[in-house]
Length: 373
View 1 (tube, rainbow, N blue to C red):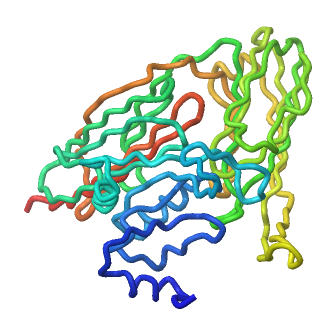
View 2 (view 1 turned 120 degrees about the vertical axis):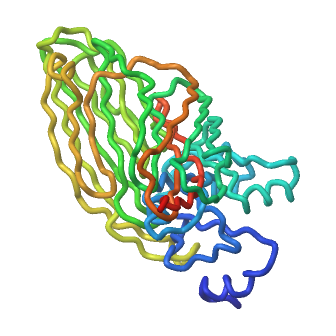
């Protein structure tokens, strides 16, 4: 190529009318190199997986970037692509919500340049966020505590709507505070590393004593490699290929507070990958390594006191066993005044989680707070 490094690409196109979107694809973008003139937003969810660490890195570096979702596929089905069996694709395509003034290519590009965009995991959540009347993507200065306005219309029941200032959670709307008495949710999440090819393979078993399983429902088994491999009224086994997003099972249980639930999971992570070609030169090779091994014994009665959460400490890898939340409403609207903004740039953004573990992330409003003298 004539532009062997991203620095040369930035220099070549810095003053041109194009939009470049850094992403975690076949090769992950390195955010130590960023050109604000042509890179207004980054892609945080696609068929490659869900990469909230990428979002967090942009904020840690104090970049003023928005967030979009995409497919990153080549099948001609934008918004409807699925991962297939490739070892670098783990979920269905994401979507970008774009607030364009007109539905034309120029209108969409102008909206992207202004960061009037947001990301979803592939469902059509509507997200509207502003600060003191300034829409998402905007930047403004104030010497007063900013008022953040949020309106969310879900594509299904909402579970949580979280408002962040930078990486600090400053408000959470719990949309489903009540819990089922006999429906148990087991979820696992996280990634193997901060780059491309970062999926995790989970194998799990749940066993019951003094009770029975009457039904099983899968949550975001997006990969065709994922499946429930064994079912009975006393035992469920599964394998799950995922990357970043939260996935799991819902179990309806006939039992009592004394019913014992024994959950065991193991995970294998991608330790390394090697570039390969096609045809005679061979495809890319993937090396897996054994990672997490855990067992969570509990009872229905114990879960009524709160969830059992095992935080595995690496790239948000976590396992949760809990009584399933009852479905909440599919929309919410609220306003929050932040009484403690930090002097300087404060990025306010919202993360939406539905009960089916579909998500949305809004681009920040960048509030330059000037503390009164």
